Amino acid sequence: MKRTTRRRLYAVLRFAVLGVWLLIVAFPMYWVVATSFKPDHEWFAWPPVYWTKTPTLENYLTVWTGLSRVYRTQEALSMQKPWLALQHSLTIALTATALSVALGTLLAYGVSRYRLLSDTRMFNLLMLRMIPPIVVAAPLTLYYAALNLLDSVTGLVIVYVIITLPYSVWMTKSFIDEIPLEVEQAAAILGASRWRTIWEVTVPLARSGVVATFMFVLILTWSEYLLALILTKTEVVTLPVQLAKYEGSSEGRVYGRQAALAVGITIPLVVIGCLIRKHLVRGFSFGMVKR
Amino acid sequence: MPRSRGPGAVFKWTLLTPFFALLLFLAPVFLLQLYFSLHSWTIYLTNWWDAEFVWFDMFQDVLTDPRFGWSIARSLAFAAISTLGCFVAGFGLALLMYRPFRGHGIFYAVFILPMLTVPIVIAYTFEMLLYQKGPLNGILSAILGTDVNVIWLSDPRIAVVTTILLEIWNWTPFVFIIMMAGLSALPRELDEAAQNLGASRWRILLEVKLPLLRPVIFLALTLRFLEAIGEFPKTWALFQGGPGTATETIPVYLYLTTWQYFHVSKGAAMSYLVMLLMIGIVLLAIRVLRREKRVLDTLYTAPARP
Image (tube, rainbow over all chains, first blue to last red; front, side, top):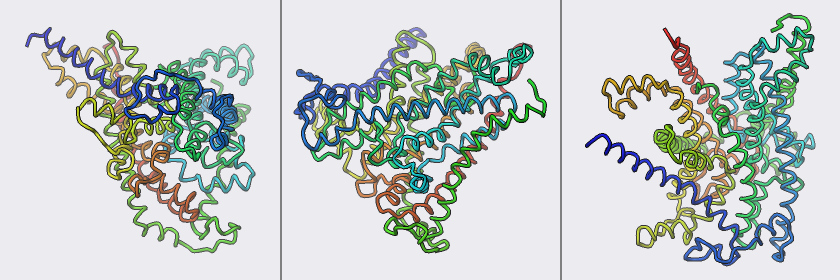
């Protein structure tokens, strides 16, 4: 075969393979969005309704505002919560993330500038984080019960800070490492205190890194399910737990509502993810990918 | 940087204090777990301090429980197969994508979406797709021209495959992004040199790129494997360990033991064993990754110009 023919064949094949994968990824996404706009009788229809002709906003109104006419007994009970869940999810995720990144930045600064922990030890800590949290979840529950932290926003925030701290430290560290020492020394010579140096020199210079870390950790805390499920009962609900509970209503499966809830939960993450796309690698390559 | 011992040392420790505070805060959890694993306590006993001290009976209990052995085997198999699947798909896509082309950005943006989707949302999305008279079977029927009736969710053997496919769908982007970064960080010169020497694309991939990418490959495989062992939300939301015990992985069985059968002591003993196993795997992973990192560092710190 001639070289150009081969190249063209390769290009065609490539687009075919990529196209198939695009469908595999996009179709489920499309389906959940489509379902969220379908009226009740189309959720289960056979043959499936691929494109609804009677789109409705009812699912969204029901789930996110409680304004809908569809306010029936059983469903109503589990529907009380979405607003609360949104509020709790926002509070918990934002607070935990802010704390985690703030602490993480300080620690990272120490690790980077003072070698508080060797890189090796940091790396080991990070890897130990890979042990699934479920192994300490049971004693944690009882410990929390004793401290009166069960079913509270504070309790979840503390846990989330602990489990995301390794990521915060590691990600910000790689950004702080890149800031030349001379800048800080100059600030010190000009008479800035250490804290002022960190706050007014280092952090602003590492800003993009800190923001990326914030977003990354926010993704982790926003979507966390297991610990939220175990450590909360009735008072505090987060969105993932709320979504899972929705199924429990005796109305049977309410796909349209679940879909509306699911879309709402996912959109912020997709937006954030696209914003920090370029930094995602840093979050989980732990210095193994050189740029 | 100031490295004096006086105020510097104080400052240093100020930075570390929150870290130690958190460790101290967590310490009782591990003590509690030790207590539970050596006593026999279930939630039906009101006071946990009334529990009977039973030495290592709980551990014996766990070790003679065939469900525990199976859950470990299942988790390891699940993690291994899904990791392999993610790797093949992710690396394959990265190889097709790492050189920019028209439409590159769109593909990239869509490909990373599953990773940005909340796992529990993925579970429910696929529940909407996979029930027997559902859209996926509908589409497959239309494509193949026959009536496809795959029982994705309630046939024990197929349910296992479903969990693996979901995990692959969810985490292929992870491998994809890492491998994209790895591939585009490769020095171009080597590639060109090999091409000038007349090597085929295939040989360049096998003999130039793969060896250079080894550290990155190990990283992707290790992280994916470790994360897959802990996978809980999707499996739980869709299957709760069922049908039968087909999808009962370690996290699911642990959850069932502690929060459905309320056997906290047995769960604690089980947790210790799982933790030991995980620490073993992690230590092994650290050793492998450290070695690879050293290779990587020597590769890239070589002087750029003679």
